[in-house]
Amino acid sequence: MYKHFTTDDQTLNKLRAQENITGISERLRGYGLVSHADNSYPAELLGVHPEMERTVTSLQNQLSEGAYLEPDDENGAVIGSGLAKKLGVKTGDELVFVTQAADGSIGNDLLMVRGIFRTGHSGHDNSLVLVSLPWLQRTMALPGQIHELTLAVDDPLQAAEYVPTVSALLPKGLETTDWGELLPEMREAIASFDVSRFIFVVILYFATGLGILNTIFMSVVERTQEFGVMMAVGLRPRQVNHLVLLESLFLGIIGAILGLILGLLISSYMSRVGIDLSTWITPVTYAGGTIQPRLKAIFETRNFIDPAILLLVVSLVAGFFPARRAAKLQPVEAIRED
Image 1: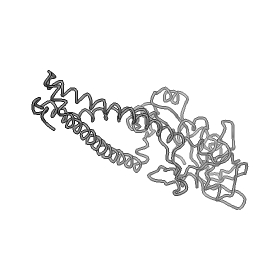
Image 2: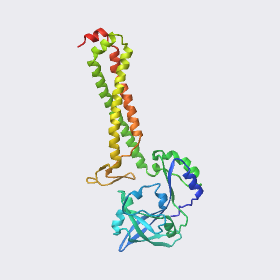
Image 3: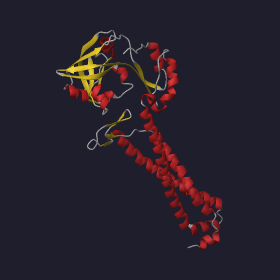
Image 4: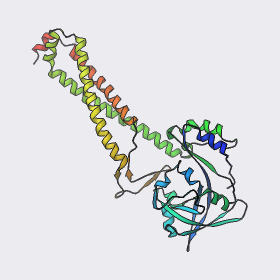
């Protein structure tokens, strides 16, 4: 309760001026009892400025009922679906919040339920209540104080590299931590996923290379007499080599174009609609994150460019051996070969 601090407009403006920072939100946390009728449950109240919180989370998109907090909503609350079910409340109902205030008194006040969210994360849905920051500061006797300053960055995987820059902009005595330090299990899960993805990509492109190698090699074998005639009329071995490599490259280009078209169509569908598995599974909470039953894709240009370039490289590498064999053919022997 007492590990709080204050911020000023100058510090916030400095943070907003950083190109890699895409959002910033001031937060105050309070713990106590929320009650409705004869039901009371412990809860975590998160005091925020709604317009600032929108820039760092997507909770406003997880509403199952009602509406999100408005900037001028003094005593509104957005409550988790699990907690709402335990309390037996719906939008428009009244809540009583009781907590220990920082000055030693008992803080208590009324809240009006504006909306109910469902994230699939059991901890959030069963205990979290989003409220106005000024309201919670007043209830807890912590005027102008916050417990944390949450930042969103353009590339979450590079968040650890931004820590020194952010630390230099904050007042002394404050600790800056990235999400990897707060959620080490999540960081390890992502690292293991990257390794498994790398292994999968290696196997995939190795199989692709073998397929291209087999196709080009069979083409060279079937056209042995053709290459013999071409070399007999003056085509040099180096030119034969380049001809086979060019055919291999064209095969890769055609495959890349077809793959990009099909990949764009599937990715577009997956990013907009996805695959709904809610009939068979429920949301899974793991390492601080939640895997939703509706699987969706994130559209990234890099995921199209890199595979296409790799496919062209693999095509050229796979065509090297058949091209070398064709270049070493002797015209007379090649013409006589069946």
